[in-house]
Length: 403
Image 1 (cartoon, one colour):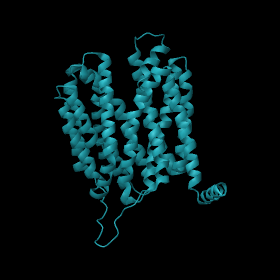
Image 2 (cartoon, rainbow, N blue to C red):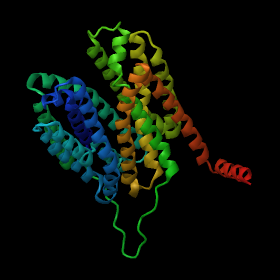
Image 3 (cartoon, helix red, strand yellow):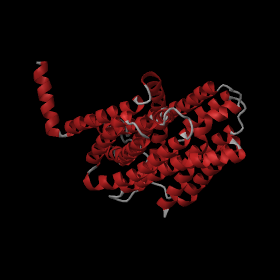
Image 4 (tube, rainbow, N blue to C red):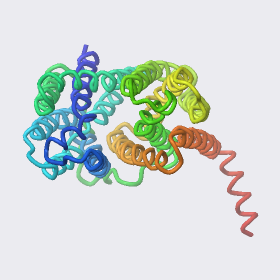
């Protein structure tokens, strides 16, 4: 029951955030930036601002989750989002909107907080399944949010859409407050005991952080180039480009949602690292040929396959992060993971746009494929080094080379 309420709360929260964010360029124009190019630049700055402050604040919130409990942090993110996003609907200038976006990145982060809570409360042997289900809900909300937000904005305007987002976030917070069981926070250290300090295991965390970073870069990096690529494949006509692009993105989000559930279940059966590396290889191989497609059906099929594989990586990588640290420091570890994801959200669209402008629309599809395959190779090496006998052998070889 508690897990079901949590899923509903995250469906509401993520739908709320996605309800207005894709329409930031239009809102910026309403705030006085009339030129469409300048409005697009402002929208990019607004997205980057949130990613930067979230990357900086996430580790701090993660540590507080270990002390105060992840449920408290999830309510903080939802209720803070209610206030900040609600105020965005009252902004009168782009600078006010930028300031609120900076505050949003600092105070919110519902996905990271929900991930910590699910990880901490999952029954023995079911963490992969529950993390996968949570990620599925997030992908479904990410697909539905822009669609519903677009319809609502057409009916009553973008300003009112911020009010809907605030209401959804408030409802999410209330659901968590009254319907979700919390995990016990870490016990306070008794006087005289050594404080729980020291670095987290770097190698174990890297195995989870690397795929999380590159998967989110791959997901977000193609978005700026997709409409232009679709127009190119349809002969340069702008008619129907928005609809086709939306269909491809929507189908990809649904495929990623399905992949999240499948990945979480497979990890419990075959092992997290094995499933994660296999999914990265599949995603990379499905991404590479997208740069050379000559028709929309080819692009559609390859995007769905790649999205399925990318979606399956995320809950499995979270499982790896969970297993790499003791229970009392999971909040700190997932805070670092949220920081890496936020950086990816900032760099992905920026890199995709620059690649498209410099090398053509195929480049934002080709480069993520290469990066995903490189990430899988890196994980294979790190996994190899984590095996004690091979690690000792490598140290002996390096010592011989140095001497």
